[in-house]
Amino acid sequence: MLGPPGVGKGTQAEILAQRTGLAHVSSGDLFRENLRDKTELGEIAKGYMDKGELVPDDVTISMIRERLTRPDCVSGAILDGFPRTTAQAEALDLLLRDFDSRIDLVPYITADETTLVERISGRWTCRAEGHIYHEKFNPPKRAGVCDTDGSVLFQREDDRAETVARRIEVYTEQTAPLVEYYRLQGRVVEIDGERPLEEVTDALLASLKNV
Ligand code: AP5
Ligand code: MG
Image 1 (cartoon, rainbow, N blue to C red):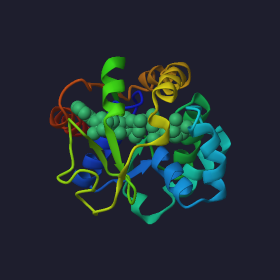
Image 2 (image 1 turned 180 degrees about the vertical axis):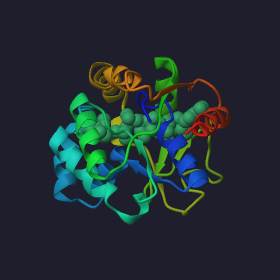
Image 3 (image 1 turned 135 degrees about the vertical axis):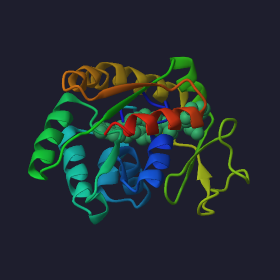
């Protein structure tokens, strides 16, 4: 899944994973799990994430390589937040060749910057498993508590206004060029992410039918 910060990649990947049985592999979630568990990888990632910068490619690629070898990825996975640089995309191509696998589809979700900022500023995330809510657009049944696992909801450190602005800049500079990278491979389906959540899900499910 390609698209700017706050466009709805994580939200939609979670729903699609439930509907399709594919694994949901989110690089951001993996870094946040490592932060929460205070691992060495979490320590490394924190310095970059707090500033809205990307974690170095070598660290990110080896984390994803390990994740993709876990049993739940055997029938396929939805990648959310990875790849994010050309070097990561090239590394993924090599990795998938090793796994005798391939990328079937690259849904590219779009929205205006004002929409992104509005979505990010109202987002609440579940501590246990990263389930995603929005105080206005997708509120939990009980404020501050995850519907799925009852854990506490928190606001991400990197969702502060100045960090969000930098994340959007970094996206434009380093990740947006991947749309062209995958367009040349004929894999991109553009999805209008301005629409309500359920409509975006329907569009994604429709695009998956062609795979
Ligand atoms: P990451 O966690 O991937 O953050 P991101 O890409 O900035 O994207 P977000 O998670 O903010 O947005 P999203 O598109 O998932 O939107 P969501 O579904 O939550 O990365 C964080 C950091 O980790 C990076 O800055 C970097 O430091 C590091 N990192 C991660 N991957 C890396 C990599 N590959 N290489 C290097 N560094 C890496 O939705 C947002 C809100 O909107 C929610 O509240 C949701 O409820 C709401 N919403 C969703 N859809 C709709 C809708 N259609 N209508 C109304 N509201 C909606
Ligand atoms: Mg996300």
